[in-house]
Amino acid sequence: MGRLRKVISFGIVLVLATALLTGCNNRTQSRTSDKIKIGVTVYDQYDTFMSQLVQCFTDLVPDDVEVVVYNASQSQQTQNSQVKKMIEEGCDVLCVNLVDRTDPTAVIDAARKNDIPIVFFNRELVEGDIGRWDKLFYVGADAIESGVMEGELAAEKCRKDENVDRNGDGVIQYVVLEGEAGHQDAIVRTEQSVETLINKGIEVDKLGYAIANWNRAQAQTKVAQFIEDYGKSVELILSNNDDMALGAIDAYEAAQIDREDWPAIFGIDGTDVGLEAVRDDKMCGTVYNDKEGQALAMYRLSLILAKGGSIDELEDEYEVSGGKYVRLPYSKVTASNIYDYLAR
Ligand code: GAL
Image 1 (tube, rainbow, N blue to C red):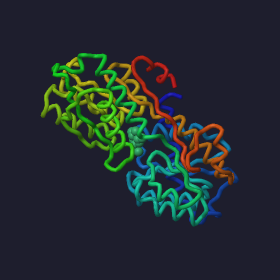
Image 2: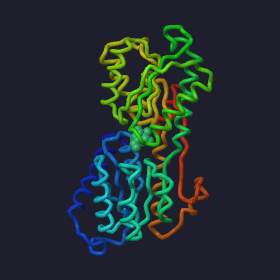
Image 3: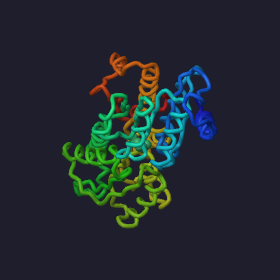
Image 4: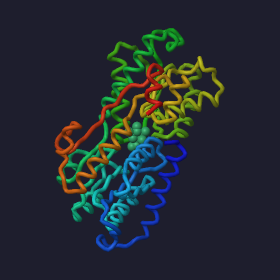
């Protein structure tokens, strides 16, 4: 499906959801048909990876299933109200991308009171919370795997390309661009990518780090500052996601630094724009966060739960851990396999 059509159809779903916001306030009254109804709330629709993941999800939904999508706009309070609305609107199952992964109480309590199962996705709640009710599940990926793969990609690049160590001191001067403080993917990716690099025998020297909240513009500002502070001496940038890696590229382009003087830049996600940057040799590699696979697992699980079934029904196709978690594998993307991913 063309990107424009994707954006438009996501827009339509959101408009539909907004219209429904003014709907009735009683669960049985507001039910308009016998269709299964899935309610989705996403922490921020302008997050590149999340908007693509939600788009994959809505693309899967056939005409005889209804889906409403709400944007929580980074407010847990807004999301709590949306959950109540979706329950009143007659949703049979909820897919929740928590704003604050440490604060799911209101969401869980509302769903439990009305016996509506929840598939949390992408922003992982803590074990104590998911254990609070037997109708709470999580679909996502293993953050450790993504950090390890990013570290492996960077280690291979450092070993094979002597130009990475531009000053020839045998040590790689690097910076890390981190996602939101407290997000499982930010914490673990930062830790694991650097640890893997070191375990692979690369000698490193950390020049700095910056929290840029998954955001391209914020990353550009932070990297512009690194350029001011360190000039051309940054040799490697490990970014927790593609959008921040792209912000770093924007900063080098804005500073009119020649391509051969850029650091090696790595991201995670394999968003459309991220993959294009790998194809165009601006980013050295990324780690594919399988949005298609996650969307499909969320959709399958939602349907099963809406019909009163059990997560066990997924066991033939997925590894289900602890009766609650489905995690899709990551994979590495470089110039050598980029066209396989661009074709997805
Ligand atoms: C991560 C993803 C980031 C951002 C974040 C939002 O998995 O890599 O780009 O979308 O989720 O929770």
